[in-house]
Length: 287
Image (cartoon, rainbow, N blue to C red; front, side):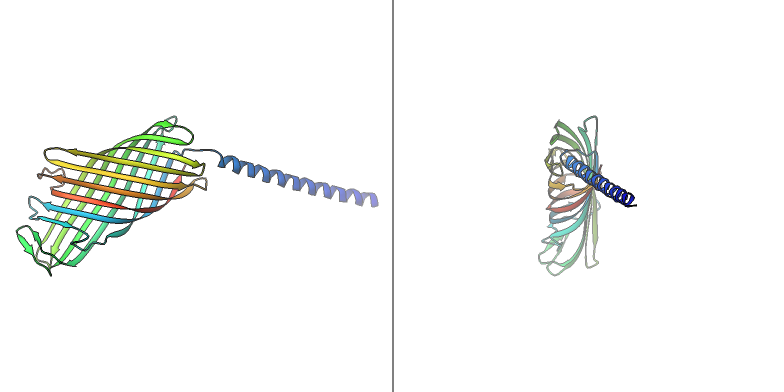
């Protein structure tokens, strides 16, 4: 009996030691996998960013043309009482393809939908009528920015990516203004502009990287002149396998003038200038 009890206790001790040894080996293997994963630089194939954008706005518009009877040159924030800053939701998608993921397509969208009512502090001429100080003006200005860009990374290694860009920005916009129910005028504008640019990405660590892209263009014809610049700089942190987050800065400037009602810009004739800048916090899903 004594011998059997001793053997039984020895067996229990052996099983316990074996169990603890297996736990230790599994833990070491898991730690090794985490460390190995944290030491690998990985360029994602597909990503979606959605974030909140707090921006400071500055907009001028001069609208005139057939059927509009509208001839007003104003700063929307100063003259018509629009808020200087606004919080909007912004989203983008990026897809890399090819044997080494050198090619990519970027699509982005965000919009500003703004309304204002203000008693005029200065005289404003609209068409053939001048509205004096004290007139109540109601205004609506909605702008959307849709971008579709192709990138080709002419230099790429494990940590650095440098690329050239070619694409299109489309800016559907509407503007309307009324004064004490005595008149109401509006203009609809769709301004497509091609852009060229540069993009870079750099891994600081396997989980932390910094990115930037710059899209610009200016051109002039007999009927039109315009320019656009879109500058983005952001820091990404990807602590999870398919999810991350980041902080970015965006400065956008856009202006164009049409000299006749050609129909290309929705019957719009005049000048529009838009500029904004701000910070964006975003979440990211990637594969």
